[in-house]
Length: 419
Image (tube, rainbow, N blue to C red; front, side, top):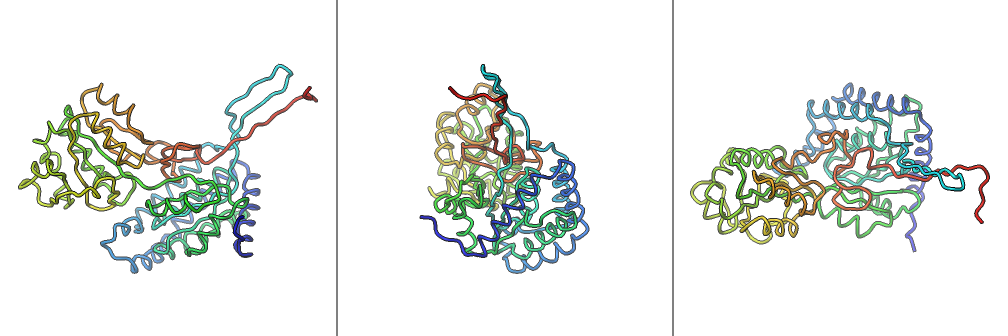
């Protein structure tokens, strides 16, 4: 039997349901215009956002890997506004005809995209998610119930207030965005809201995702946790490998597409110091298996012996592990065993090896001679993303607009009855 909701929580979700019905009635031009108005407000009220963010940052240790995720800067706020405008400019994903077939009796069957209705998103210290998720859900015709982490409480409240102020000014139901309290009780209410919330998407670490999956009575799409590998094949080019490893590891260490483990063929261990040289400038700590440790000893300053726990680990920090393999087959086996089905890459000049890697690796995004840092909705041309799905049902990889709609069948005829 479902656990009961408190009356206030049920009321919030019912308001979200009514708002979703309102959003579905908006014209495409009106929908887009609201998002453009929110983008303008983000910029004009950026000082308010920065002040709220500063209060959150004061409560967090700067050495915490989540600090960078939480941090807002004028440049990041400008990027958030820009991404919202990019979403507003994308074609509406609602009402798109996917298939049509005419039956022998004259009945016309059309498969057409439709909004989910109410989408719930539970996330951690990423205040940009508040804006990104709202933009995507609103453009896709759905209202959104958000539950952020306590680390970003002030920033999220200010972001939600800005959005709701614009909705009111534009004559749109402000319950299109509902920000829940940052409490465990609010999370539980969302996970149990069958019939009120249509879909839950967790964005965060493995602990959050596991908790949501194991406790939700609402359908869930898993996103977030990224244990990412780069494999340096025996045919790999050193310059290409050095550039990809540096970018994947250090561009932003706190994001899910960052490199966690370098896998290298035993035959190329002699070039490992060259591959890792640039990482020393960023003070990246390397946890190497015995063979890789021997290859780096004396040539790399931040070196440690790896333990088994250092593989299959999402570091979210200036840290990574290195594992040595005999060949391509062993590399594929290791990555499939230790990855999170997020993003994996091979550095290889041998086209047959690259093709086998692309075919055999079980992940949402598989790269050949490209940094895993590109696993991002904007980089894929999808606009902002709601997350990276690591599962195989409904959506996989970056979840842009097209991935956060469902579909329905529309059947028209002229009085047909079934014999």
